[in-house]
Length: 96
Image 1 (cartoon, rainbow, N blue to C red):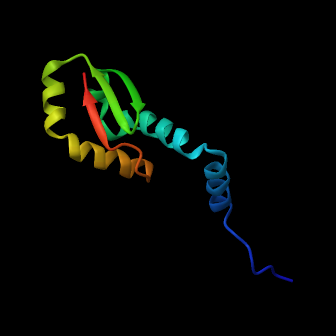
Image 2 (image 1 turned 45 degrees about the vertical axis):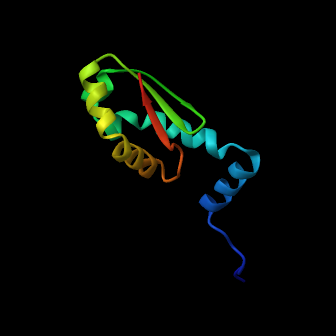
Image 3 (image 1 turned 180 degrees about the horizontal axis):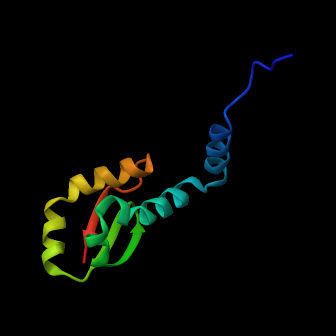
């Protein structure tokens, strides 16, 4: 006999994480871990620190030239990082 009210395991896990308030921190962690994959190894080499506060990604860079280039591509970077995670995690980026 087959059950008709079955749900996918992935959907159940997402629902549980959302109920426990763990979905947002998990997405933030995934975004920070995906920085090197999305931006590439050269940008990652010049990245010193990544922190997310109030939907703003704070990026500390060691090169002023790269900082200026990334500032001009801010909106594209936000879109790419959110697409990587599959959720709206950040709304702004602050480069230091």
